[in-house]
Length: 338
Image 1 (cartoon, rainbow, N blue to C red):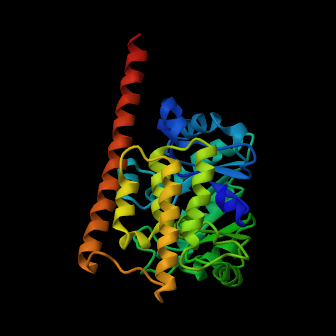
Image 2 (cartoon, one colour):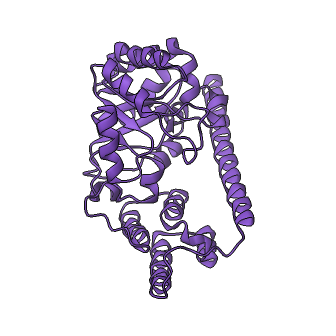
């Protein structure tokens, strides 16, 4: 909703695990949070069983404008579960999922994919999605091996080839970090729209024509976000994640504020207070003639800390999914016995 207020015209949910969404009410409540007026909205699922993804989608089909099959996640957890970008190795299963959803859901079905190293293979896969019933295809212009978006440029030429090959709308994803990038991407690819993920998380005003880009602008956006999160109940771990994205990289200098965001019991009001203090400090730094943060840790120590935090977050997410799946299996076994 914050991004919409700054120019975004459509939104996706985070990737949701279809089996957990189908079977675990608490998972549904945490993963799918929206509000009146939060439209158009695409619900993004990962999964490899047509009936499971269909059942998951039916829980929220009246609250969204399309159901999207995620074929882009490159993380190890996706490899283990055979979903996301790793499901692209099994086009027959992908086709079965898309066909089932397209035939039995009252809303359109879309898909987001990555590219292969081979252009022809990429085009063939995209055509399969269209032929199976996808009403829109989003293409991330990197292979699943290219996880580091900062060091691997998106292949807009391959995205353009996909656009030329399909009749349904195609969205381009990758290297869209500003409104200027939007124009460049559309000019190269000829696509019908663009997506942004990490850059939009860092600055939800990315698509705004009057976007403020002074050093404290993202801290102000974090305060805006806190107001949305206070009005619309949002899980604390998601509030924390968004706050970290928007306040970086200044948290590398104001490590006491970083610690406050990491503390237990984080609330939107606390995020607003931290963001306000960050804005005040950034303005003071700028008034003194500096526009970039001065990390409190050495580059090596900071990189090590950020890597540790990233690994810890990935482990936590994997453990959360594994625990939820085990609970779902136990509940299913209990129902079968009964």
